[in-house]
Amino acid sequence: MAVATIRTNLDARQLTGRHAWRASVALLSLLAIFLPGAAAADGSYKLFDVRSAFVHQVDGVYYLNARVDYTLTDGALRGLQNGVTMAMEVQLEVNHVRRFLPDNTVHTLRQRYELSYQPLSQRYLLRNLNSETQETFSTVDSAIRSMGVIDELPVLDAALLDADKRYEIRVRAQLDVRSVSGPIRLLLGWLADWRLKSDWYTWSLGP
Image (cartoon, rainbow, N blue to C red):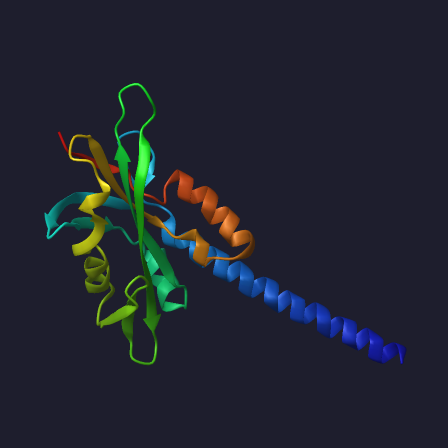
């Protein structure tokens, strides 16, 4: 009975050790996705960059067009090919600019994506989590380019804005840490504040 108990404890420790090893590999793969990035002028690192963005109105609805550059390191490519799913989010805010008071956010939008590698087909799967559509690509470069193109995305009913008020619209891209659980989420949440988001791309709307 004692021998059986010892063997069971050893098996449990071995199993725990395997889980810990796998968790460590997953964590290192996730970190490799984001280290290092391209150094910005202030010495920080930016892996995502909103290159352009604008809205235009059609039949009372504002539509967003934007271009986002996503930088993937060699570690990111290895992580994808080893089962790490990249979850990205493009955030849009519409703020009412007030002269004597803090600006007031009147509208927000989150456009979310997931990028993964499918080993059986050897293709990259890009899922649009808002529209629940998906595409596959033969190369990661083509998948990343597609994720960075936003065309004619409906974002706001023009009736929600007052014609005589000034608004600012801003857009940024960042890692969606909500898709990651446990301690890894906490760590990536800290990193997201540091380097895993683009700067805001801001422009004015209204008089």
